[in-house]
Amino acid sequence: MKRFIFFFVNIILLSILFVSCQKDNIIDDSNNYLKVGEVVSSGSSFNVGFYAMDSLYVGYNKVYMKVTDKTTGQALNQATLVLRPLMDMVTFSHACPAENPGSTANADGYFEGVIIFSMPGTNSWSIGADITANGKTETVNFDIPKVIATTPVQKIVVMD
Image (tube, rainbow, N blue to C red; front, top):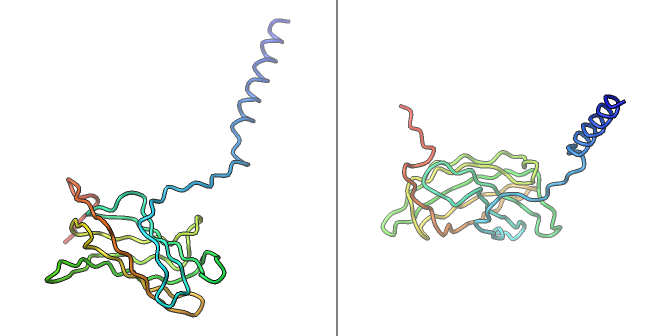
């Protein structure tokens, strides 16, 4: 009889464990994107948010853009974005490598791209972006408050 009760209790405990670990109905609305800036496009058709996973730093930075139709308030899932990073050093300016986002937003509704900042700066970097969606092409410009230096520089690999 003791074996039967022991066996029965273990079966119940195991079934409770497996039932409580199901993730079918869990909804995770949080995201880990850090907002860098938000602007309205030059033709005023789009609201565009610029995000990153962490503070922007010298090296490889994944960046995210959320494009919303200003008239409907709906986030766009299809758009073409061209990124143009630029550092203004007063007497001259220069760019850095960038990978344009794909034309389809990710599952969270963000367009993913990459910017490889070549040097640190405070209020000297800006990101221009041309957005083509819904038959319109418009421009946005984000002023980047700070790109920090890291030691060693993160994720830059040079191949010759």
